[in-house]
Length: 162
Image (cartoon, rainbow, N blue to C red):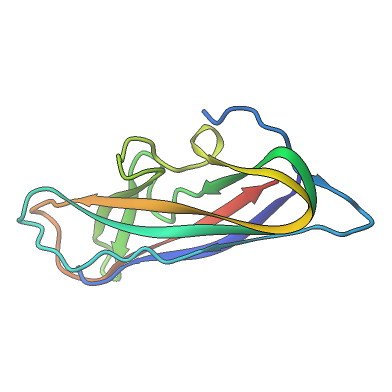
């Protein structure tokens, strides 16, 4: 298996994968896979208003020179610079933090992480062609009266295994 890392910055402005068939790289053709992740940006919000604020981003994986029958790519997202998979943290320049997380769907039940928390993207049948698959990332923060105003951010690594 090959792995590719891409660094994606997710910014806040103001305020068990099943087993799958692997993709086969044919050495005479040459194989490439690239991953691009968009920023996730939350709108301004008031921490005194109860509830959650949500935002979305996307991960796109493009591969060429691979062959598979029902293959898949595993997409992992790191825990970030200051948090854990259970509670990622956005951080301000002053060192204040806000808990947030990234989920696999808008139901916000499954955290998108690594290993068993990675996302498996099925590629279908591919025979030496270029293909691209997209997957939305759903992020959420819960308002907390203790939050201080400011700009918060976190940097995450998106990794694909193919």
